[in-house]
Image (cartoon, rainbow over all chains, first blue to last red; front, side, top):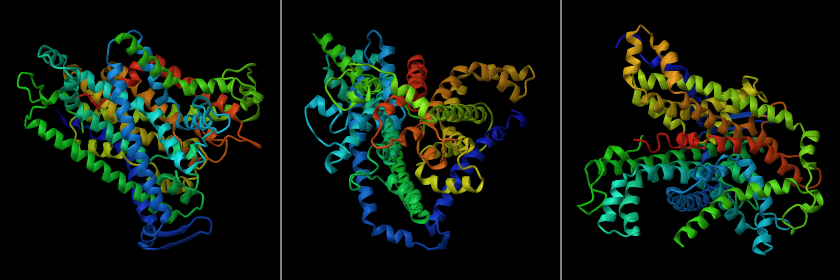
Length: 308
Length: 270
C-alpha cells in the first residue's frame, strides 16, 4: 500500500462534524451545569457544585428518576418478551411473509409524536375506543396510577417491532442443522428453545437490550406529547424534567445539571451492558459449549459474534 | 388445528400493529358531531372536511415542505460524509481505526437531552435559530454513526480484489471509490438513505427547541402543538397524522426488506 492509501483524510469531515455537534456540546453542558444561569435576566455566574448539591435535595428530581427507572424497566422487559414471541412467530415459513413483516414495521415507522397523539385519542375517557371496547370509564391519562402504565403500553406498541425484527435476524443465523440434530435426538420443542435458541440468541438479546434500555431511559417525545409529564408529575421522566427546567423556566444552569445526570446514567448503563456482552464472548471463546449435550455440534464462535 | 391457531396469532398480530393507525384513519373521516359519541365505530357520514381544514386553515403545507427539505438535505449530507468515512474505514489503511469506530459508536449512545442546551446556545450565537440549517446540521451529525456503520459493513463486503484491480489499472483511491465502490454498493446507500430519512422526518426534541415559527417548524412539532381554539380538534389531528404517515407506510411496504437489512446490520452479522 502506498502513502496515498491513507484513509484518515476521508474520515476527517465526519470527525469534525461529530466533534463540533456532539463532543463540544458535552463539555459545554458540563461547564453550564456548574453555573447559575438564567437566560431571561442575563444572569450568569459560577456556582461550583451548587446545582449538584441542590439536585440531591430536589424531590422532583428523585421523582423523575424513579419514573424513568419504572418506565425503562417495565417497557424494556415487556418489549423483549413480546418481541421474542413475535420473532418466533414470524420466523416460520408462511405465505405473505413480506407483507406481514411490513405491517409489523408500521408502528416503528410512525413518528413518535403521531403515535402519542393517536394513543391520546384512544385513551380518551369519554369518546376513546379503548374504554368502549373494554366497557369501562377509566380516566387513563388523568389518574396517577394509570397514566404511567398507559405510557408504557404505548411505548410497547411502538417499539416491540424493532425488537422483534432484530431478534428475528438473530434467529436466522442459528444453523439449521443444530435443530435437525436435536430433532433426531428426540428433543422436545421447549427443550430446543431453552437449550439451543436462547443460548445462541443471547448476544443479539444483549444488543437489543442495550439499544432499548438507552432509548427508554432518555424517553422524551412519547411521554411528553402523551401526558406532558402529568398528572401531578407522575409521568415526568428525567428528560422531560430537564427540558422543562431548560426551556420553560429558562434555568440553563440547573437544567444542564439534570442533562449531565442523564448523560452519566446513560454512560453507566452502556458500560454495564458492554461488560456483560464481552464476558459472554470470552466465555464462548473459551469454548464452553452452550449446550451440555455432547452429541449436538457447537457452532464456531465467530458465526454468532456481535460487532462492537 | 395447529395451523389454524398459528394463523389466528398472525391475524391478531396484524390487527395489533395496524389497529391504532386504522382507528386514526376512521377518526379522520368522521364529522365533528360523530367524534363525540361512540358507538358507532365506523363513520355514518364519511367526510373529507378535516383534510381540507388542515390545508386551508393551517400553514400545514409549509410545515410539510420544511420536513421534506430538512429530511432530504440531511439524508444527502449524511450519505456524502458518511460514505467518505466508511470508505476510509473499510478499504484504506487508517490510523487509530479501532478508536475511531469506538468513538463513532459511543456518540450514537449520547442522549439528545444532554446536548440540547449547549446546541441551543451555539445555534443562537450563529444566528441559525428557526432555520432549516439548525436542524440539518444537528440531524446530519446524529445520523452519521448510523450511516458510517451501515456503509462500512457494505463496503467491507466488496472484495478487495476488485478494489486492487482498479488500482492496478491506475485509479487513485478516490477514483476507485466513486467508479467502483459507489456503484457496487448502491443497495447499501439505499438502505441507509431510508433509515436516515425516517429518523429526520420523525425527530422531535431538537425540532421543538430550535424552531419557533412555521417558517422552519417540522411535522412532529406541528402536530404536537396543533392549535385548537376551545377544545382539541381530534378530527384535524387525525387527518394530519394520516397525511404525514402515508409516505412512511409506503416506504415500509415497498422497502421492507431493505429496512430490515439496515436495522439489523452490525447488530447481528458477525
